Amino acid sequence: MSIALIPLDERPVCTQLPASVARIAGLDCALPPAKALPSIRQPGDPGVLAGWLQERVGTSGHLVVSLEGLGFGGLIPSRIGDESASDVLGRWSALDHPGATVFGFTLVPRTPDSLDAMEEPSYWNPYGPALHRLSGALATGKGVEEARSALPEEVRRDWLGRRMRQHTLALAALELTGRSVIDHLVVGIDDASQRSLSATDQEALEGWVERLELGGRALVQPGADEIGAVLVARACLDVLGTSTPRIGVLCADPGTLERVAPYESTTVRETIRRQLESAGAVADFGGADAGKTGGWDAVLVVHAPEAPRTPHADWAVSPQQSNDTEAAAATAQLVLDAAAGSPVVGLADVHRPNGADPALIAALDERGAWRHLSSFAAWNTAGNTVGTVAAQLVATCAGRAAGTYNPDEARLALARRVVEDYGWMSVERARVRAELGSNPELHDSVEPADTHNPVLRAAEDRLNAVLERPGFEEIHLSGLTLPWHRTFEIDFTLGTDR
Image 1 (spheres, rainbow, N blue to C red):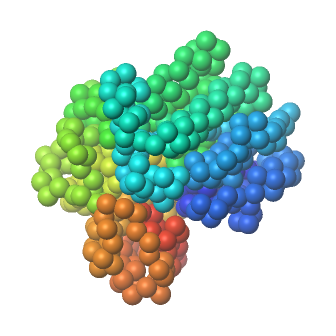
Image 2: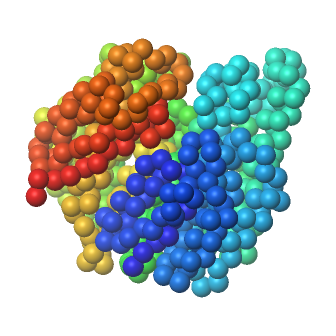
């Protein structure tokens, strides 16, 4: 039994992560041929993707489709491409497959406060920060003329025209959901803040979800790259015919779930609720401690965001030396307490963006907690992290209920996140960038982007040491590469000694 996926783009989190979620549940996730997928700024082939989707309908009754992938050929192409809304809607006609269940996702575009044009239109350098300020001004109505005056008219018009096109397409996706061309839709809010056009677009789209009475079939939520995995998990429930899992949410300091994490527009509590719901689960925040785990199918432990700071602290680029060891110890102990009452426990570390809290890793090591975890994540934003853990927990619940659960795949998925989110992002990335001499304020360009580079070869050796902790002894990694020729994401192969 398989699920067909048109991914957001070719990165491992958009292709390998969803496929591993399906394997945890004992299913296959079919992907289009590599030639049809994008290569960074080079778009994939929407025509080939549409034809592949048509071919898969006969063998995969469950289709998970990135609307940016199908409509533009990928995420970056959706940000820089010149397609009109009508062009994209024509490509979306490939979704109309009676008898197939379609899980679709699309994104509200971001406006990063950066000079980096690697993933954006070329004018982002030098106008990215000014566009970010204009987004806030237009959202709040304060300082609009001043913000406009810092930008050439042609830049303003192009940027706003792209946002209007994407908003039109998001509304069209809701309309397709209303007509059941799309059975379940997630609209992701890509890297936003509370005072931005992304937040106002989110509010407008949520209004239409309510008016169209699409609750339960359409959700608007923080996140982007993880949504494919989240919807694959939801498809696993459908394919296996298992019931909706109830997942308890525990936090050592529940009040911290009301904080808004960096790059998001809603509280962490709301992010958790929506990610679990998108994955097909129900979030239960009712437990004050781990004593109520007996009534849950799984437990999600959250290492909550630290108190807000300006600028945001970041494990990968600008780590702060002062770690909250007390909060880390409390979270690690909560994992053990939860595991005493539930066989399925996941841990979402959203303490800071772009990596895992070293104090938390040390506390988990000290308590031997890795053997008690079914899933873990700590990458990029809170939405990315929570969505990843939610997907893995739901796939685990689905597989266990159907008798198809693959514990070896779950252990490999856990090991991958420990290596990437802790070993690479929190430790090695800063060291590698220093050795390469790249500017930490911008995305770097690394050649060669594999272990032919002696810096990366040495990093691979050190990353293997990350897997020497109890619970991962038989797992090793090889073939470290930088898929986008930058240090923000890595790829590698995991093997076992068996």
